[in-house]
Figure 1 (cartoon, one colour):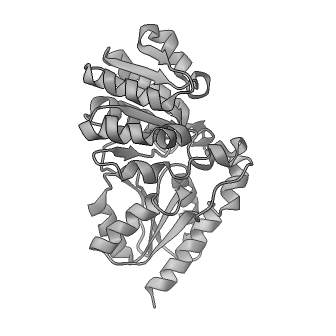
Figure 2 (cartoon, one colour):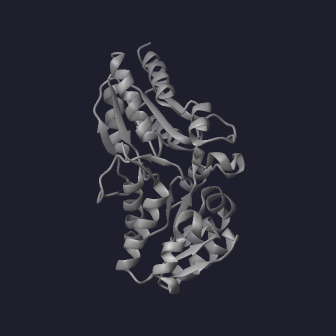
Length: 313
């Protein structure tokens, strides 16, 4: 299967959206070469601003641009734009519901060789608690491109999380992303595998492994963490009787947190996490770090077997 980094889809979507709307501007926190801001600067030099290593000021400036009628996109590594600038996002952006679109790059364990300090494993948790914030975690490059276009065309603040390392292309060019949406990629009746980001492809592989063991797994790409595709997830979890939530993020606060909160309210079935259990990451290639924390097809399959056993007691 063809692979491509999701960060490339982000800048491609941003270029497409900016070609249609001359009110779109891009603010970079000195990561233009890493995330693709240089391509935006080459095509729209008057609409690109490198503010330096200054994520907090970048968000405040973006809020001002939004108040002036622009559609500001900002981008940096997820650990910095979501973490270091959290208070500015909360107070200057979300309190007023401004349409600042935040690109969280090199998110999760995809930043592997950069070490634990650069692996954003808490970004979704701190973004999804903010009132009015839409949080999208696309599965591949084409879906990330669609997420950037959706953010540009939709009112309000957005946080779009994407990674550095290549991931399998699951979606075709021209796919659509809808806040509150999710896609059923595989039907199943014994366990629901809900995944986001790089774990979507992993869960598809796990479903094939489970099928060989006699377990029928449904796979859902829950790319919209907030708002969550609640009705669809409840329907599938109710039908299967149990679920696994998989994401390269802390177990607390990420997709597992979102799915567990939903099930506690509307569908009390057991849910098993596949994520990082209350610890920081480690340095290594993305493949090594994903394996270190069990974010593999084998790890998902083991979680599915455990939760099916819990459901049948």
